[in-house]
Length: 130
Image 1 (cartoon, rainbow, N blue to C red):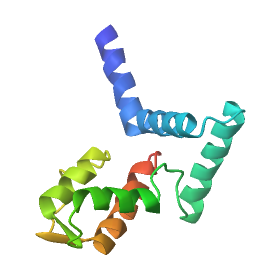
Image 2: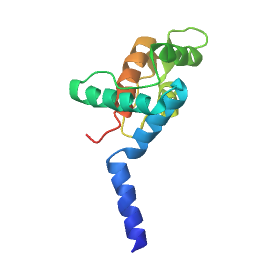
Image 3: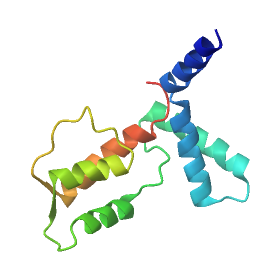
Image 4: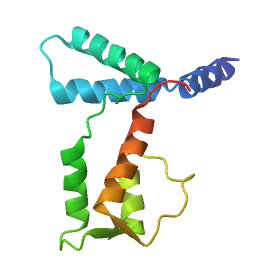
């Protein structure tokens, strides 16, 4: 009977993306280290709620400069593109679930990389049940 309650609790957490929410908030909290952490967390939850309702940016640690930096690391010789394998590995490293994504093309430009990253990061930052 106790095992059933544990499974029920795990299902609830997974279905409602509670662990993703807690991990996202914890990451934001540790990155920003605000003087008033409770107020900061409330603000982040309000931003998340607004983002859900108004389809605006979600609270996320990863910004444009981070995307440029990751692409630069993957393209150290400055070719202007990365391989599909590098792209997939970058997504996995950033916590994006890639098992349901279509196979990427052989070459991914920085513009495509950043566009796709925004979409995937928005989806992974949307830490609420849809």
